[in-house]
Amino acid sequence: MSVDCIYLDNNATTPMLPAVWEAMRPYAADAYGNPASAHRVGRRARQALEDAREQTAALLDAYADEVVFTSGATEANNLAIFGLAGEPPGHLVCSAIEHPCVTEPMRQLAQRDFALDWLPVDATGVVRIEGLANSLREETRLVCVMLANHETGAVQPISDFGFRNSEFGIQVGLHCDAAQAVGKIAVRFHGMDVTTLSFSAHKFHGPKGVGALLIRRGTRLRPLLHGGHQQRGRRPGTEPVALAVGLATALEIAEREREDRIAKVRQLRCQLLAYLQAHADPVVLNGPEVGGLPHTLNLSFPGCQADALLMNLDLAGVACSTGSACSSGSLLPSPVLQAMGVSENRLHSAMRFSLSALLDEAEVAEAARRISEVVRRVRSSASV
Image (cartoon, rainbow, N blue to C red; front, side, top):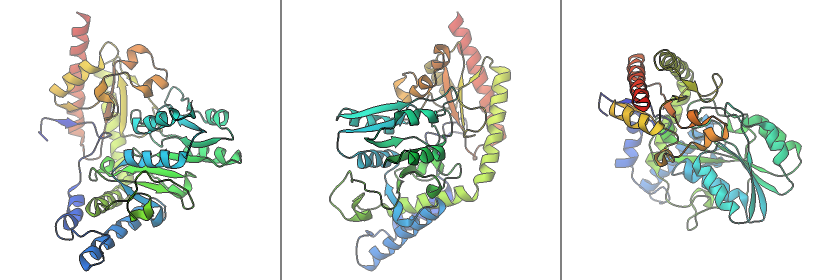
């Protein structure tokens, strides 16, 4: 990465820590055996894999047999949604602010004769609990509500949803996409009353290409893939040992440093927001002012177009985005902000800046200066 580029797109992915690579290296180079093989090379790989599974489970308050390694949160979300929904007919409920790797599978099921209802959110991007009470039916199979939003950082009241779900006396699966939460805030699987929970290692300074789905004991889940016995048949195929070790290592570091990281990122967020409000006004915050992920700052710059801002910020050496990495390239208005009911000028001028504890105050100060300069220039050009 060029020293001229300041990376403010950590919700899309984070740089992998050197310590994570060092933990992975032996299983990428020397202990390369297939963990399903019975010989000693395979047994060494199997031991590393199961150690990573147990470590991951312990860090997230789960049992080892509840951890299924996947290629990332997209696969984990698909496995949970298609695996829990079963066969039509049936009824599904989904929040309106989910990531595309949740909303698209839900829409696919809607095309297969499932009924689908969307849970509304308030102006800060928090799901309205009363919306669930009004949506549940006797035939409801699955509810999907994320833990932390990828665009605004709004944290959802998942524990309240689980409690209310049990009040209805019907068996409903509750899936939680926690890709933006795991490794950033405290996540305790058994304390959340959810059926399944997904996450990706590259969101918390681990390797790309690996994530996991936590599946509560006793849950019946139909696999997406067939042809192997691995991971109790729920996700067959040779497990990526080195990547699993990397995930567990990154998660252990994240949990150990969590409070220090949160404090630092919160200070950096306040620094960035204060400077932009002083030097790029008008600036409008999209999402919660307090109580959300401090890593995420979604701002609208009325008088600017988001695509022009993105291009000019890239030229100025600031890496950021207009939304999720899986949809920002489309340049379409954010479904998350639309669900929040933001005005048109806010919707089309919104940018997401996402931080990590690897940044320092000098980098954020320089990024704020560059952003303010670009905003003023784009506004000036638009008014000509």
